[in-house]
Amino acid sequence: MTERIVDRLVSERDTGYSNGIYVPTQIQFAWNSNHMEGSTLTARQTAQLFATGTYTAGSEGETIRPDDAIETRNHFTAFRWILDHVDDPVDRDMVCHVHAILKGGTAQAADPSLSVGDYKRRPNVIGALATPVRTAMPDDVPRLMDDLFGILAGLEDDPLQIARAHWMFERIHPFSDGNGRVGRLIIFKELLRIDALPFVIHDNFRDRYINGLMRFPEEPGYLVDTLLFERDMYRAHILLPGGGDDLAYTYRDRWSEAEYHRAVQPAGLS
Image (cartoon, rainbow, N blue to C red; front, side, top):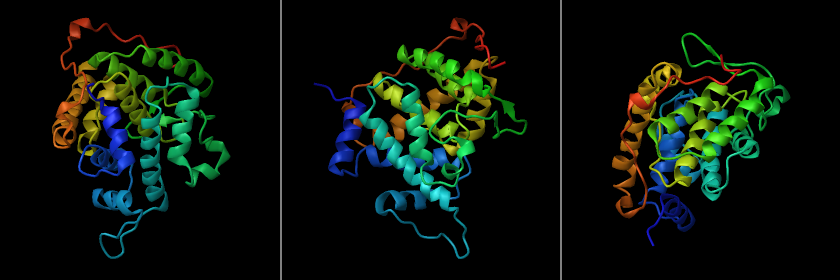
């Protein structure tokens, strides 16, 4: 029987094997995803934290925010958790649980107004942009997320479908904070579920990725091509060097803009 990517990840996690795909996926995923959101930990410190639970300062007087270390450890935990729930359907309980893991023990978790582990209660914006973009209003979030869960349930290895599902999560912005990281964990999980090649967004392509999300309704190719590139990167730099050339997965890397009709934004995302 041909082995799935998720089965290899779980096997390496459970046996402590460090020369395959699990360890580099954990470290690269946690560092890139957190660093994109402003984490002060370096890639080296992230690797140390994964291996030993501690890290050393890179230079005298270096400042590391406590929550950066906490959220990095939490990202490791969230990734381990999604591996055990890859074949479960994505629903409100799941995304809220992943959010609770990611934010557990942080200063935000102590603030009830930020509703860690539940949908946002106050309007927010995508603040990673020069011009902040409005997101779904809190009252619209449950309905919009239910729509997204339906789309994810029917997800196939289609570049446009994958990009649209990820864009929807990030545009809804269902949580007070941590939306990018939760969204990237969820789409990684879903690609594993359908046995498709996953991706890790690299911090050095952050601007291209963010622009792709913002331009998606009018120019879907920008995000589609960015995600395809990152899938190529995952295969070339993690899967194949880690002995994953014998794993079973699909990777459809072609799409046609002729197939795309302007995305109809669900009511509440205008």
